[in-house]
Length: 90
Image (cartoon, rainbow, N blue to C red):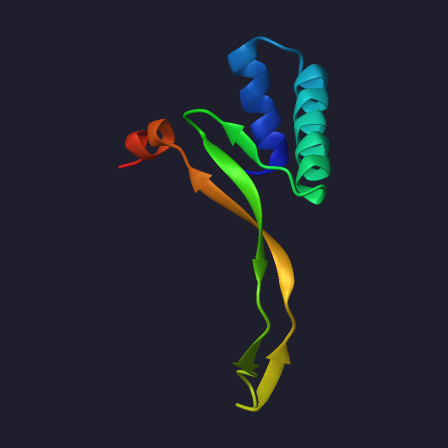
C-alpha cells in the first residue's frame, strides 16, 4: 500500500474527505518524525511503539568485490508491534 492508497483507506474508514485524511496522515508523520528526532518514544497501545536505537560501527563486505568495508555507527528507528496487531496477523 502506498501513501495515496493509505489516504484513500483512511478517508473511507473515517468518513473524512481525502484532503482531510491526507492532512491527518501528514501531521502524524511530521509529529512522529519530530518526536523520534528528539529521542522520544512513541507508543500506540495495541498497535505498537516506535523508538530510536543506536547501531554500533561494524565491518561489512562489498558484495561485488568481497572487500571489507567499515560501516559507521548510526541511529535507526525501530518498530515493535503491539499485542493486538500481532494477534491479528496470521
